[in-house]
Length: 348
Image 1 (spheres, rainbow, N blue to C red):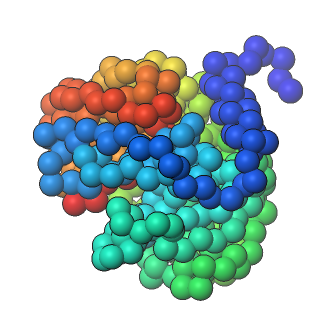
Image 2: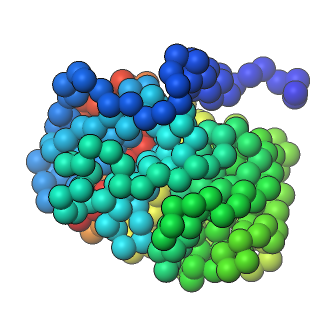
């Protein structure tokens, strides 16, 4: 271990793993159904017409704001959407699997008694991405040096790809050919070929870095990883698979989202309690910080509405969700979450 003092974020990650370990020791590892009436989280007026889904690490619940809250497992982490937007994916970090819920019909997220599909993963699955054809899901396993490949037609585990230590964020290239994963424990970005389902490159980042969240430019030429250790946004040139520079953002940045028009990146900075807004429209190789928006608690996950009008941020330690107007970069609503809201996805 390096000689520097353990950072607040490192302590937070240790606490997160400890929390889940405690949950695992107290349960069988299977999904349970809560008999307690679960809270209905508010849908602020600004988000009327959107479907906003929020996962809660501590309760194991996933809520659709203003509609329904369901208990999925003892603890859940990331949420994601299928490419066609018809299925919600949830990472079950206790059961070590991915649960899928249909977002329409009689067996929908709001109506069904259990997940539509479930597939096994590696240890501590956190985030996932669906391929453009919808047939395959790649899942990062934070407690392993692996990424699980799931067949989304049979819901079987195809394989686990070995990658650098502690993969966390994951993103698909716009052309669908490659998957990129930020490897928190190895100062690296792993590059996987979708067609061959293999690791084809490892991009070495600065040694004193902990890449956590990940995003990509609209043209696929640049990948961006949040450095949870030093507060930088790290830039990778995907044509050469090399480190291309960095820009300072906030303290302990976490997840990254991109605006639908490809002009802006949004990064949740836990330690500084801010949302960084970066312009990548003019020169994606050199993102420019244009705003730093103060939010509550310890922001982690975030999502942009499909029309780009709002950004919703999950504040873990603040038990809240912040709604930011993307045209003004001002917080326009703050609502109560459950105990540890950690990730967000939004559909129209």
